[in-house]
Amino acid sequence: MKHYKIAIVGAGPAGYFAAQALQNLQTEELQFSIDAIERLPTPWGLVRSGVAPDHPKIKTVSKVFEKIATAGNFRLFGNVELGTDITLAQLQEKYDAVVIATGSHLGKKLGIPGEDLPGSISAADFVPWYNAHPDFKDFSVLLDCQSAVVIGAGNVAMDVARMLALEPSELDPTDTADHAIEALKKSAIRDVVISARRGPEHAAFTSPELRELPKLVHTNVVMEKGDIQAAIVRAGSEIEKDTKSNLDAMLLISEKEPTNHERTMKFQFLATPVEIKGSGKVEEVVFQKTGSDEKYSIKCGLVITAIGYEAAPLAGIDYDKGKVKNIDGRVKENLYVVGWAKRGPSGVIGTNKSDAADVMKLLVEDLKAPKDAGDINDLLGAHKVITQTHWENINATEISRGEPLGKPRKKAADRNELLSLGGL
Image (cartoon, rainbow, N blue to C red; front, side, top):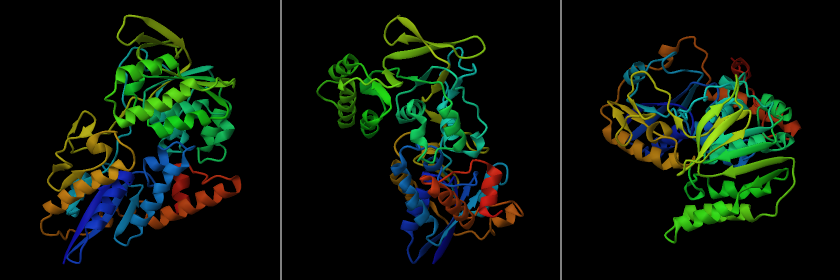
């Protein structure tokens, strides 16, 4: 029997699905010990810190992660940062293979004047702030204005806009961070514009997300019917199924009887942002109508860009266009990459499953004789490591704190508190 040790860096969906793929490839002759190394004290990646709190169904995939984690050949090493607490070279020496599953968490920039003004932020900062990510608990969001503009045409842009345009008490039964609920309840924002550079037929929203919008009970959702009809004409008869589904959902929104709520979420298309203006802080965004010279501006005090993500570079790995340089997931000698770090921020959580399975098959094909190079614990010494047991303590405490409040959990956002809840 051959027994291999595999390290997975990043305990988000891509990391867990890579571990699951290895578990599925085990035979009597081929066995794996899997160590997941996670920078944060909490696992699950974007399922914990990226999914919108008012969409709890998406988070049920965490049950799959817990099954993988308790299968008997998986260890969690939380609160361990690659490059600080341990190096990539050390992992490559200790393990038969190392899998990078660190995702993409840096927000892409627009590259326009005024983007660095106070009041101009990235969804890559705003989303973890309202999701209780420990790195963002003290992040400051300016909510003292009437209008906000969200730039982007994907589900992240829609999540961000919805969080700003909801009646904040709707977040009380969710696991939104306490500090965010408190701030949003004081928010002066009543008008939110979602702005897309291209037409509705090119938007990267998904139709289930669009179909949820008319169900918002305290928010007017506005799309111009003419915009959608023109997009349907442009899309023509050879339209892809997903695009048709999206346009059908948008048409329904545009034809909905107008409502008269205090809060409004409005979509605009074919608008390219060219400048953010303001004296000391954001005061307006200048747009150019895509395909023409016509310019106009929208007064606002907050701009959130949701135009994609890039992977944060790791020492010893080559990057290209915000992704780890790889061929089908192979990086270099005994080093592999899966998930967003491999292919960029595309697809839904489930996309990572097939992607990881394909890369793990290659990894297994490449394996040589097993190493015997000791254990990662030899390198970590007295460092405070969150194991699966510690994480289960944190998880149980958060759930029990949430229960009397009618929440799925009450998240801790402070790193030291998380360590202490774990029992460290």
